[in-house]
Amino acid sequence: MKKSSLTLVFWVSLAISSVFILWGVFFPGNVESVLGVVDGFISTNFGWVYIIATTAFVLLAIFLIFGPFGKIKLGKPDEKPEYSYFTWFAFLFTAGMGVGLVFFGVTEPLTHFYSPPNAEGGTIQAAEQSMMYTLFHWGFHPWATYAVVALTLAYFKFRHQAPALISSAFTPLIGKHAQGGIGHSIDVLAVFATVFGIATSLGLGASQITAGLSFSFEGIDNTTTVNLIVIAVVTVLFLISSITGLDKGIRYLSWTNIVVAIALMTFVFVLGSTVQMIESFTTTLGNYVQNLPSMTLGMNAFTGEREFLDAWTLFYWAWWIGWAPFVGTFIARVSRGRTIREFVLGVTAVPVLFSALWFSIFGVAGMEMDADLGGQIYNLMNEQGNEVALFAFLESYPMAPVVMGIAILLISSFFITSADSATFVLGMLTSGGRLNPTLKVKLIWGLILAGTAAALLLSGGLQALEMAMLIAAFPFVFIVILMCVSLLKALSSEYDILKLESKHREWDPEYQEESHQELEEMKEEFDKTMPEEQDFAGEEEEGNTGNEKK
Image (cartoon, rainbow, N blue to C red; front, side, top):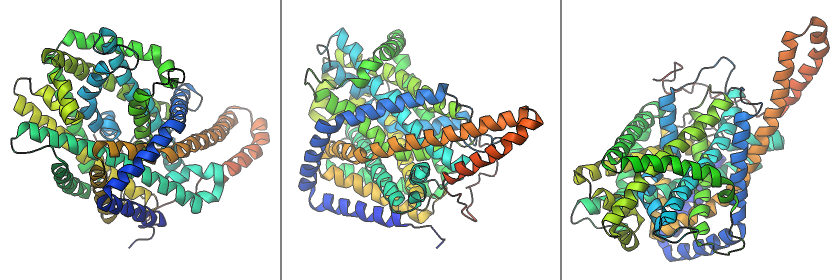
């Protein structure tokens, strides 16, 4: 086996994940009990950590867009982007939150409509708040979190040829310790957060596929057993997809996902209250921007009403942070050659606008359909779970069996793509930062992801998935904060060097001679703070022989 194909991080992470799966399979009640205690303690006493951290990530993303570092390229100065904008955005959309948008498209706006944070349920004010808070949960905060993690990894990997590891970003702060025990611990935490983050999404996807099948076919019940069968079938499919690599399996699936998602959204848009949806889109965006500071920092400290905050906002912030190592590593992998400004704008602005449009269409249509049916969709959600909302909604549309079938295929495709991408990222994190990990490593992590999702479903269903996500994300919050500090430290030093180099080229020979020594000393000091370059000899780039893959 090639050198560095399996690392200490791989074995430690594999051992921890395996122990958890066995715990969940043999003692599911104990897992649920322990998760509940730890989850309650963290959300009650440390919820403010998530609030402050995600706020800091948003502010940092804004600074990177408008600040002085925007022209620095994630790669060599003359390097071109590896993927077209369409392919790049398809990757972002699929990896970032595709399956979540489908799951919560109808569910969340409708739930907030009946139980808004600061209004009477079922009123016009409740509808307005419902759309605003839904966009809040799917807007700048998650994508800013992804952006700062992905940017840090892409900067050190493609500009300074560091290994594609979370620990590489810590070299400016802790020096050679980033390649030692501390660095290995950081990477294990990243793997831990990734496994639970993806397991949560796999559990949500499996439960929604099961709900769709039970709605569409008599004799299929929405039970844990069927959920586990769905996980097993989809696991086989995404393991088959993982064999084809990044530029075939994941790439083509991402294209398919975004085309089918847009087609489904257009179908609902055309047959629904089109004008109301457009007006909701603009109104929600305005309310979101206007109320962003108060929503961002609101902890209900004086009212003491924490149910909405704990059940929704803190869960989401934990979910996005838990997904950050996975999504961040994947986005970094496909973003070579873009400038910092282009990167942050692309990773934040475009997905936020798409999310606003998606929820304006499905949210408005869902609330109207529920009203027409006398609250039937919401009642079904309370009786059978949130996963049935989309299919109870689509059941009233023309060609309902066909449309529901397309929705099931879309969820399955998102499920497969997210899991495939996750095995790719976990393989990178546990094989020394290889851009193209071996098939064996990816298959092992695919089985671990499926096993973790199954163990959590056995230990308490979707609630156990959500609790595990919040717990796993907590230690990683501090990792991301330190990554941001390290990134700013490195960018500041390199910016000074680039500025002096620019003056060196433009000014007279006497200035050049005087500043030459200073410039060399600055470069030498800066290089000492960068991770060691790593080159996996003989590693092929999966067909990446040209710059563009249109």
